[in-house]
Picture (tube, one colour):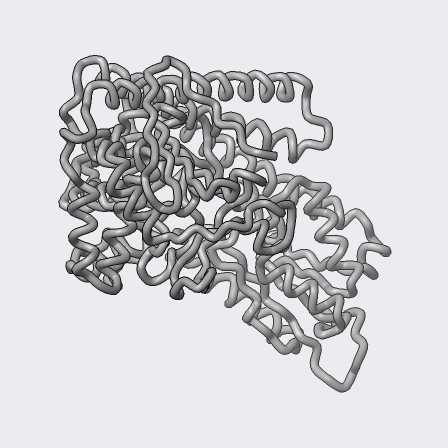
Amino acid sequence: MGTEDSNSSTFPIRAYSYVRMSTRKQLRGDSLRRQLERSKAFADEHSLLLDDSLQDLGVSAWKGRNFKTGALGRFLAMVESGQIPRGSYLLIESLDRLSREAVPDALTLFMAIINAGIVIVTLGEDRQVYSRDRLNGDWTKLIIGLAVMSRGHEESQTKSERISAVAKRKRELAREGKGHITSITPGWIDAKRIDANRYEFTLNHHAVTVKTIYEMATRGLGATVIARKLNADGVPAFKSKDGWYQSVIKALLTRQDVIGTFQPHRIVDRKRVPDGDPVADYFPAAIDKDLFLRVQAMRRNPGKPGRKGNTFANLFTGLCHCAHCGGPMTMKMSRVKGNENGRYLVCANYVRGHRCIDGNRHFRYEPLEAAILDHVTEINLAETLQAARLDDNVRELDETIAGLSLQLEELRRKEQRLAQIVEDDTEPPDAIVDLLKIRQGERQAVEAELRHQQAERKRGLIRQESPTETCDCIGRLRDAWEQADGATRYDLRSEAHAAVREIITEISFDSGDCSATLIVENGIVVHRFTDGRASHRHQMWCAMPVTITRAA
């Protein structure tokens, strides 16, 4: 056999041995050695310079990954750029190593290589040589190639369908409580095989760490602070020997497997996407649902992102707005009207000269913070909200809220999946669009009911507890941070910020009369401060929350 399509008689022609194996089992076997030996024998027989670096090990050709992201794609790119000259050889064991996509797609790839001037040689049982010249002279050879491509695709299709059927059956059994999907578990759960489809899951010592992390999150501590505390205390991470990372903490605070829920996934276009509904009570729960939902509520209603300076200067960040334009209040260091330098809150829109001409007042921060912490004793109810001393009515509300919250999360996931289908499909079926509208309506209804139940719960607590009789959690924190410095002071004020945000709805600043109006739980209690001093408190027991209208 002579060389073909050569563009030079001076330099030896190169042959590129392409080896592809999709599974680790093949790597452990004899396939790699066999393919390389056959390539070397062919190169020696035809005086070709062999390059055996073209390998896609552990890469499947079923969805064309070896061409889209693997070594085969890089090979064709070098051919097109001229780095690999026309007339070079591509040595493969069989055409199904090249592609296992449907025949039209596999043929397109095959012809792209041929038309680029590359000679394809199969070294398996068929021993075929494919080049543009040969196919022009005898196109029946292409029939052999098409048969091999078709066989490879059908084998992969059958294998994929079998694997999908097995996975689907496992998910069905798991939802029926008759089996498990995988032995892979989160770091705080151990798995012991019972039989082919079932495992015994038990909590290990890391479950205590999970609960500790969630409890710290309810105190307003962020992922960075939590990671630092765990590392300082020498608490071992789940798997890493390098301690705790902020990213691990953030991910943990969103995972439903901490309450025992398992979400099956599947791979679509190399992306891991949810597959069907979550399976409740699949794992033993590391924390209770109430603790999980409190953290989710805090994460959905955070203060301004990012670290709040070195000492968490503004306990009320995210709550303060201008009564004139509705814009946020910003903190700045300033010297105003002969006063000493200090921290002031001023309308951010006024400062930048946009949309606000009336919010010119600079409100001194330190006296306002002291007045609020001294007089808004309802803040201490944030601790009461987390206590276990709840009457039967509140316990019933807790169960309702927990159920609605989980229902809402599930509806959001379903809505996101349907929205993704609509977005990806240029002409989505009307049934999918209609179903998306139904899910959106259901989600909005659950959100409204959840808000109502949460308001009922907090109104009930305010009725049954006198603020002066609750433990002074804010007072203890104030005493502690006044004696602390650095990171400790930041952590304590962060915890106070979490308590403040749980009970205070908003603080509105009016430059006209130099007042600040603080709203507790949508108008149940209203506090008014003038010139940094408490001037009025009004309490309402109406069933409906008070609507606060902001100035235009």
